[in-house]
Every structure is written in C-alpha cells, then in structure tokens.
Figure 1 (tube, rainbow, N blue to C red):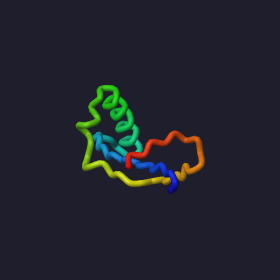
Figure 2: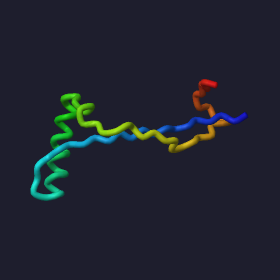
Figure 3: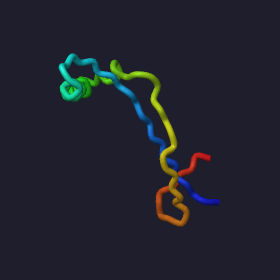
Length: 72
C-alpha cells in the first residue's frame, strides 16, 4: 500500500462595493477598502456564497521521510 498526501484548495469569494469613474479606479479603491476590511476583521460581512473546495494535488510520499499520520 502506498502513502499519499492529498492537497485541498478552498476558494472564498468576497464583494466590495465602491463608487468610481473607471474600472481601474474601482479596482484601486476596492483594494484599499479591502485592506481596511481585513485590518478590522470584517471579511465575513463581505463574503458571498459558499466556499469552493477541490482537490488540487496528490503527492505520493511512499518511501520518503515525510511525516505521515493517516486517518483511515
């Protein structure tokens, strides 16, 4: 039997509302506002939908010194 480590990636979506004259300005303002939101730990108020989870990489660690603690 081989030893595998399976990597999951979780993606969350956030929405920030801004008023701007152009897409470039909107991105700039949203980035600045997002930094303030993170500093104040208010991300959860801007989260949209459910997180997306998927398997991104499977590593075969058979025959390596990699720490291994299977749950099954």
